[in-house]
Image (cartoon, rainbow, N blue to C red; front, side, top):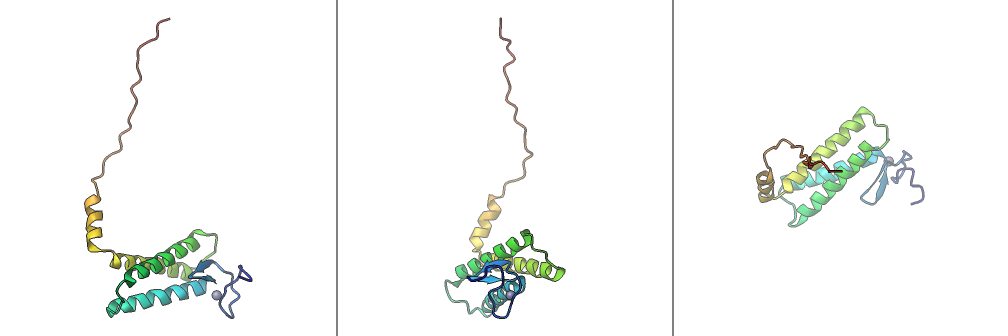
Length: 134
Ligand SMILES: [Zn+2]
């Protein structure tokens, strides 16, 4: 990496905000790259052309997209409204992909594992009130 401060894409001199899929990218190119991945995954899902075993890869890509997007959101990078909207859109889209690939029995397990809310109880250690004789 010659210059880690600027985007790796040809002809782009915008400051880099993240490292995604082996590329140092500016916000603009990060969003574009995410949309390319997510759109491709979505299209394959809709056409049912996803190769067997690709579900895990799709979830991993979606997971990385989401983590990078979140990193940018939580960093000191100043974002305009469009960039904020794109990052949120990417996060939600990644969530959709993860949920679509989650096996139904796992989802059922999550539901059954949910326990009713219990009010926290402050447990006091009852100290012995016995007085120490002098
Ligand atoms: Zn760029």
